[in-house]
Length: 341
Ligand code: HPA
Ligand SMILES: [Zn+2]
Image (cartoon, rainbow, N blue to C red; front, side, top):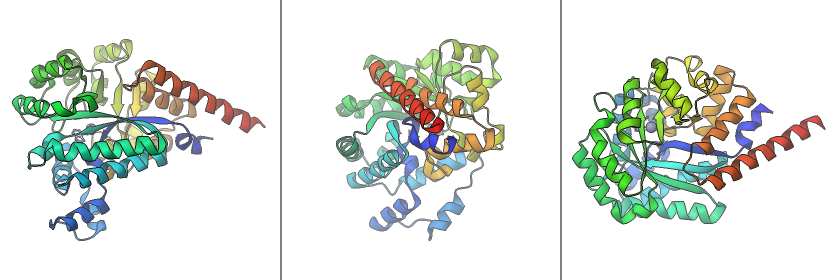
């Protein structure tokens, strides 16, 4: 049963950067369209370049790749490519991060990328009922004043933005640097998330919770360095959006069999599985689940709990969460009775 379980069950994805879904072939096509010369000739050159030492070495290529995104249609295609993957992988709900500053810094404004994103999102909703929410992420290596400018520029699109987030280079950019802009976002009715405890210390997870008032932590795997924090995360069921393949590619863990996701799960934390930047890290969501079966001997029960957590940790309304949890149990009952017949 476990082979098809991952594919068969409806899932939510909560930690996904849309700029990190830019496929090598789409990158090549857009470079050609806009007459941009890439440091790659073939698709294989791109694959070969995607070997990273750490977060920063990845970010350098990720920001470089995003430069091929110039027009509304490009952003539509980027989003559409990913939403088709959601349909294929049975990701019925997805909370998608986008990095406005990666685009506004090179003269591509909200009036270019937002209409592109939104038309793809609306088409997927119409065609197969795809559920999505958008999370606007601030780049933490830039200043808080620049984050405020970004929040101001997003005002015309606020109705389509669920939450704000915090990403990019974590070390030396602690959450409290963005305390005021997160407070402003909260006053505007936006939910909050932040990357913390990926490369940065457990202390940054406390900072995200106490200073930024986040509903969940992106990554958070370094929480295991602080037992008081672990107890707090368990007691308050503050979700961690963990990204297994990302953590291996960026050397947060040496090998998948050393990943701590299942020990966090067994400890009673609300952990979830996500793909982060699938085009750069070598796998979409289902592959991330499969890695846990292959390298950590994840049981069916653990896979099911991780999938249920993906809905519990989402920003869906309580009745929507309940709908999917009931649907999952219904499907599991059916699998079990099919197996016993
Ligand atoms: O995993 C990540 N961490 C920080 N910044 C990012 N930007 C895209 N992906 C990431
Ligand atoms: Zn991320």
